[in-house]
Length: 101
Image (cartoon, rainbow, N blue to C red; front, side, top):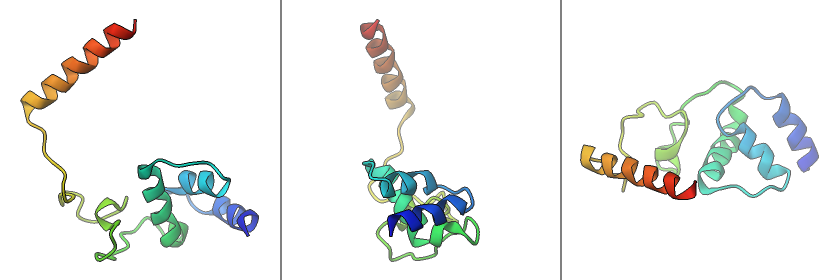
């Protein structure tokens, strides 16, 4: 089954999740983000008819769907970072990089 599925996926148009779905079908482990993209690609028939919003708003993965129409809609639980918080993150990364040298 997987060999046929892999071959069919290889001929599908390029889309978000295609690479991740191929990796999964070939037995590789995926991160949570990669798994979401792979599942959306699988659910949408490999986006064979184009990169479209699935419009399945009651799907638990819908807020994370790669081709969602309303990208400005906030994902539940996500936060907007303040300028101060971003500055502290950047400083922390610089310190971490310097410590690795």
